[in-house]
Length: 116
Length: 112
Image (tube, rainbow over all chains, first blue to last red):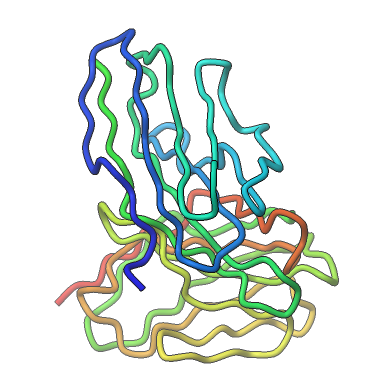
């Protein structure tokens, strides 16, 4: 398996523009997570899905952020409109979740977002 | 999930064992200890986890005290590629959501 795939790897955009980050989880995993990492706040969980259904979005900073998982092999994190304070590295991770299965999370390489 | 306390940084010599401590004095009986690491510019990577018995895999060993209030991650022969931030996390295994809450971690620098 190629692991968790994220695209783009780098994104530079201007304030006010819409940004869409993409993630393909490891095949067979039923949990998908979106994290954000900044120097000030470290690694933060934004939202996670189980079987394509959002379970906990309490970490989503505000209404400008939205995430979807239309099928088991694809998820998006959208920021509209983007602001300079959204600049961060965004990680996607996936894991199994059934009782008795390994539950360690596998992380993608991240998307480095810069909003100017 | 229980809170963990780790030293912010530590150095170790290449080829020597690196012993990374973690305090989790409020850990509950059903919470596991997990270790992840993050090499610069990469996503976090799972290392090992345990409940109360010592654990070993190809990457590291995990020693958990009998009262489970602290643990030590051991990298038996540290290499330069082990330079990373190491995170100790305690959580209930298999709980709804499998959430990970990352603290500040320990920044480990392996020196030649």
